[in-house]
Length: 200
View 1 (cartoon, rainbow, N blue to C red):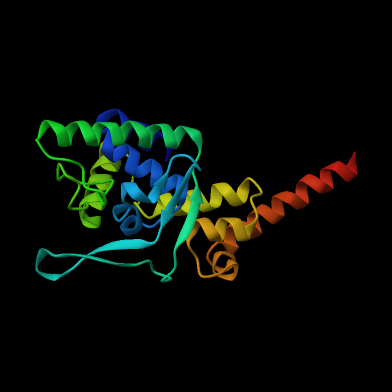
View 2: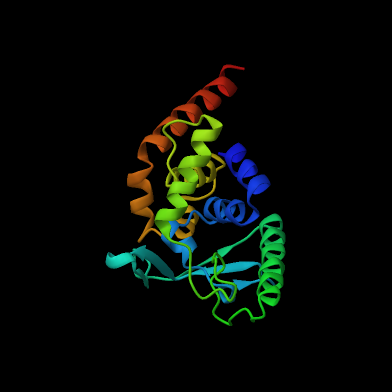
């Protein structure tokens, strides 16, 4: 997954930052598409995820609540904040070059110089599919970035409740149910570690 993100960042900084943000926050693709610049607080180092973009009928985009109809605040690492600050500066420069201003409510991921229109979730999925094909990564889906984030955090010993909050699950029980298989294998590994200590 990391190699895919690095390749994306080298080829298309905007798409690379989309994938990076998806992994770091564990957010769903529609939630990342719905992020506006005003949702990022560079001083506190957090991002607010409260909306989602879905592909509607007749080529329309629909903005709505998140899947659980709730908002969440996610802490961002310094590296991701630096990437987003760079993308914000690039967005402002592009808007100026086109003779417009970046709107107050501009979407972070937008092809409109003023940030008025968000990226389509379907477009992101297709772009990710092409990236995987070029890199020979078969059977990898965009949604797997979310699973990668969750399993990595759980494997690092981050509490389930914290992981659940970052993913935007309704409660920790949902996270436990979805990642039960991972936690079971992790528990088996824990047994081996402890058993090895006792054998010594």
